[in-house]
Length: 117
Image (tube, rainbow, N blue to C red; front, side):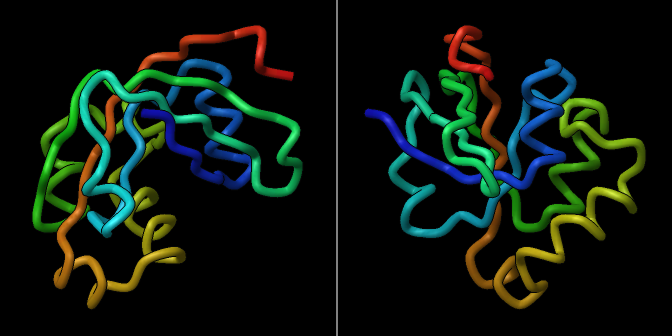
């Protein structure tokens, strides 16, 4: 299965450079469908012609983003500190959403570097 996700320019560029290998998201209905071996095409939100095709290598379920970020090197998420990552993720997801649905870390590898523009 192939899924599509949008990313702001900064996290998109971190994936492009290879400095981000885990995407953190709320475990909503869309993310509940993702399985290891599926493909995710990330598109830059301000320019959807810029895409990166990735393959899901692992899925990590946690109750909170804090727990996820505490169990892996911060660099896997393209960050410099856990506080920075939490501040960034909470711009998109509320703590209430996080606690209600839980979260998922999606570890991926780039499949198609030529799709990166």
